[in-house]
Length: 415
Length: 114
Image 1: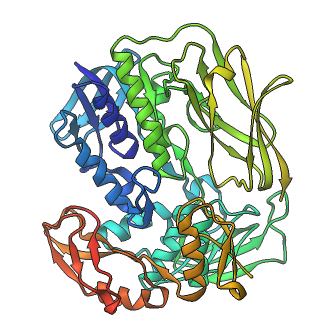
Image 2 (image 1 turned 30 degrees about the vertical axis):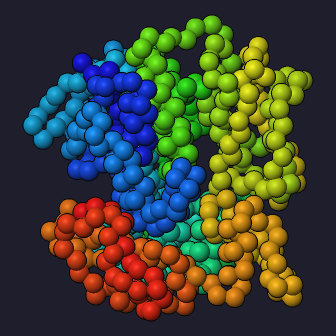
Image 3 (image 1 turned 90 degrees about the vertical axis):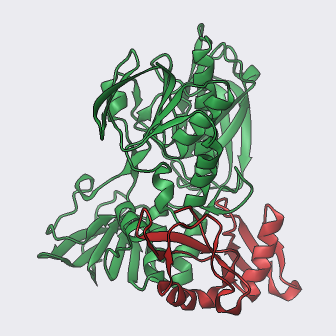
């Protein structure tokens, strides 16, 4: 029997296992379906990782390796090539391994399965079904790990970070990237990526546009793009044709929670991740969740922080810490699309609560307001907020005590 | 006055650089933003990240990066050089793959063990 089983050996799983070890657990297993740990970081060869965590600018593989090295010499066991098929409420974990079917038992579990990409099927783009339409992350893995280029003339649909990074990457590798198309009137990616991935290479960004047709028999031959109105409906007469052999989709990430759902753990419809308390505990006692399986992050540094909290809480649980008493709930106010955590244990020993959320509007000078009914609990000023950048506020637990429902809202100059 | 988005870190500060006042930078949240703003207007540089072919490795490509920023205008030239590089496993993270690329004084290093 393990003290802790961590599902997933990406950045979240590695950080959770490490922190649980540092908090005294000795029988920890990380279960990873790939043949090496590191998760998505292994294909994110660009730099910009680790500025918060290590005060250095690292590439994805370097960031992963820091954690793998910290785990070396600990007793944390890593089972590779092992796919978790089912987790039961009593923490039995059924796995498919190269050696066959195996059951693992643990006193606590950390869910760190990460997320996956939305595909063409989720968008219902009309047209033919030729090859040459990839998710940006799949094309990234082919190129960066296997040395295979997706194509030579590409259009990117969606301005999420992976799409922007791939626009630069394919350009550097000799492909012509014709355009990046974004349905919303603002980009879904980080501003720095708009600058260093699109502007640097003169790749135009079409905001409020979408792909309305895909053409080609066996291989993609071209696409049609049109402007959309405020209801995101294509406007007739605004069509632009692009001749291209590749269309990359960077249209959102979905937390991977089949195991979570099957185990009967509560899922938040806003994030598609499990509902969590301030210590990252899910609705099942002793089962914690962290990283992109909970909500999609922009920065791995924040994944590591969050996952360390999950690992520490799992260690506490194994040592007998239990929560009881009142529970507070965080709710969306104006301008806010979700909050993580969703709930707060009234008897938490943490002095501060890290609250993460996203806004659903583009703001200039603005204010974040945390309130309950008519009572204002805290406010935070911001120069700038966009949906593509996750917001983070730190609330003193003392101030939140006694409030059953706590609302997070925003106000200010909307752009 | 030129407006720039700082790319040093993911915060992406909005910088204003005053060309007429010795490239004075405002709007930056840290010292590195000031350096970026001044450089970007006079000699823009970028860290190049790519891969090189590797034999006997776990994957067929090994990720590498320049161990410092190189002039933006030399990125494609540097890519041409790195496309011809072929290394052998094992390689250590941080190991120099190519010294002083394009006489920039900057080395190209591996960014993982393989």
